[in-house]
Length: 387
Image 1 (cartoon, rainbow, N blue to C red):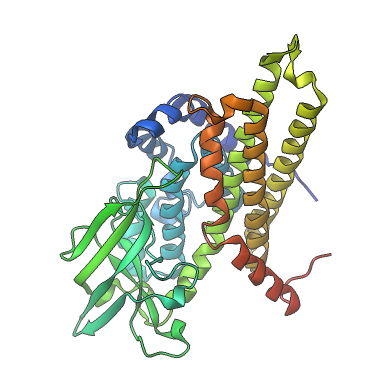
Image 2: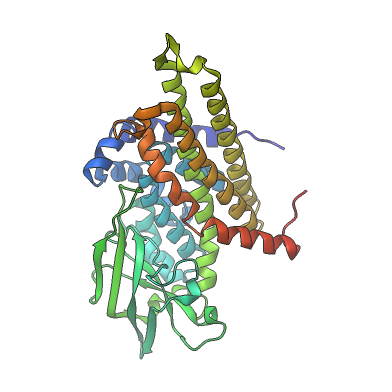
């Protein structure tokens, strides 16, 4: 068993780390508080080729291994988790298109998606359907060589920049079970009837927009049906969410790493009663706990990523990593805030933002409570073994 990064992964991580330290860390707090969109950071990610992480090399992408994929989201989230959201939704969608798209769809979209000339996201969630995707109401009616879409999507990252935006719809609302009547349609920006109506206010996860999208009699050619066959939308979406959970687990590690860094530095520099607060045993215990949680979350995330690189089905492993790492991120952010005392509650210190960003990790890409059920069912059915 090898718990070390290989030389290529190490070089990739170091390049990312340098980019984050120079281009993200110095501006994250001010830009987040002002609501400024991180245009320059997005351009930097384009130059590094990061929008092509999940795009095959034949279409100009990096075709990154899953451990390198995780490293990307860990490092960027260490700087500013919201920035990772811009890249995360794009990468999940690219992975889905590369795996399930027709040859024409891949040739038409993937080269521009790899460079960031085009960006994308994924429209699954609705006002009345989040984790329960079979409960969506957005429907697409076939009329000749077109589909006519009507419905509303919520919490859509990259909605204002996505071109195309994959939209999960019901092409057969009467199908039983419901997932057999679900498909994904690729909706291009500027299509009449497609409207981004509002940006949704959030506790954290700033830097990227999360939007409501309304589709009113949106007509798209039948050639925009992902994969060209109706009824496979749920399968296509769920397969892409395996990488999405690695993405969230890695973001969680990035938050935990930054919480550790901030807490350690503060414990060394802050004095009380004539000595650095790091000399007090209570602070030492919290620091040690953060370090243990951080490293355990990192190893579980890399383990799940490496399982995907081995070519095995890893929905259980990615779910386990996402559950554990996301809960450690919140615990580490909370302990870092406690070490900072009153200053941890101030917007002048980084831990306040970490504390607001961390809770989303236990919600995104499937809530942890639901994922626990998924993991348990896999164990009971003998589809996963822990030993």
